[in-house]
Length: 398
Ligand SMILES: *Cc1c(COP(=O)(O)O)cnc(C)c1O
View (tube, rainbow, N blue to C red):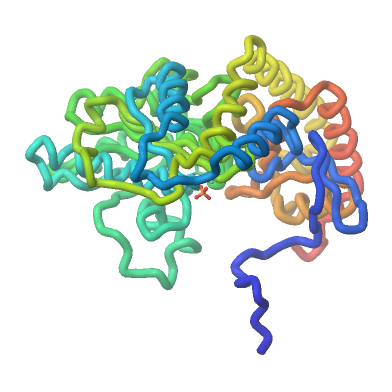
């Protein structure tokens, strides 16, 4: 038998972290990395943040799990706090991003069902989208690498080009329930929705009685310098999915909705054994304690600006490698020029310069630091990145 005990679905790299401290990760042999991957935009407060750690420790000792058979003072309190700080009227808690997506899809279908239009079940989604790995979520993307071999998938999805409003509007028919879209595409290549696109989808929803579902699992929760990425566009969604940063490393997700959009989600329509358990709620509260402190989001904006500015200064010195900067706030991507390959560059930065970043689609590499970085980390990132760019050899036969 050669199959590893851990199902080999991930192409794991050689870094084997055993400890984290703030913006740094330490490997098995004590190697130190500047962590500008942050668990793929999850560790919003870095590693070992004292407030988050303490909240989890105390809650674990008090009450970890009871099931959703019982009343949830912890869930009510966190949901209320999220409602008070978003467009939403109601929240369903999950353990991951993809479960929030599943809840969003079900909520949208159930809305039209409750309105007497059960035929309106289709969601228009977008090319290069990433919504997670459940059968529902891989049905909601056109990316073959996620779908191949898993057919038949869930019916009821149509795919338009991202940031192409006319293409999206052309797909609306009598069976359309709404749009499912990342406000800023993450895995797909760090492309932000244009204002015309996001605002145009909102208007189409209003005109046709459709639901706008924003997937802010990666771009929400302070990542772009606003609590929610939709705030950059002056609109609000009907349904929104959140995860990643919402638990800062504790597995937590949420599906947020307006009262109207959630009208079909009545007793018995949905559930989760772990979702919203007291331990998760304590982690979620600790994250919000920090994020809602005055000045926290201003800090993200400031650090995002510094990092972007430093990238802008660096790019002309390596213009055979780098093409453009994408993203918002501390959700930044640099598109590389062929024949340079972003995946190779990420490996080079990691193995030779102690800097962790993440590859994305469209030959982009992502820079997703903890939101608590300071100027010294920006400087260190740029030093390592510049050194990496200087020493990066592009294979001549590439
Ligand atoms: C990570 C991600 C997901 C999936 O979240 P999981 O917690 O891995 O299930 C969905 N959508 C977006 C935009 C993501 O970045």
